[in-house]
Image (cartoon, rainbow, N blue to C red; front, top):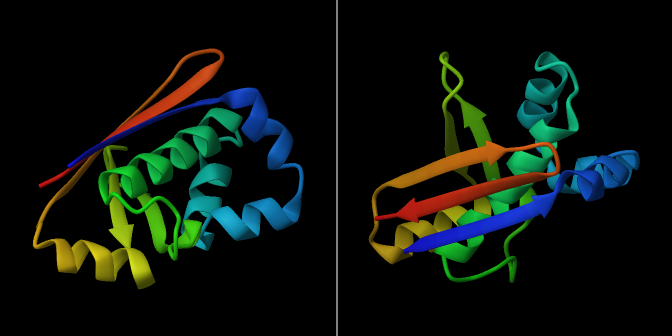
Length: 118
């Protein structure tokens, strides 16, 4: 199962000015990563696109799944990976699949992500 998403960085840059948006969409670990990476809006935009790509690959959208049920983590070398909680974890387990791959990319105006669940 594959999911893809693209988002205008400027949309996320505007949205993250609202604390309620940040708390609704990003986990504390994601917020910490954003701060440690210098506070570049590309970071939040990439994580947002990754969350969207994951729920598309799960074939559920955010129907019954919260944004914080999908967490974008990063390895020591900076490679992104996904950790699931709550309803997202249940859907993934029920799918019988065992692996989630995520790739995130940015340019000046857009962030995009592709997810492969297999």
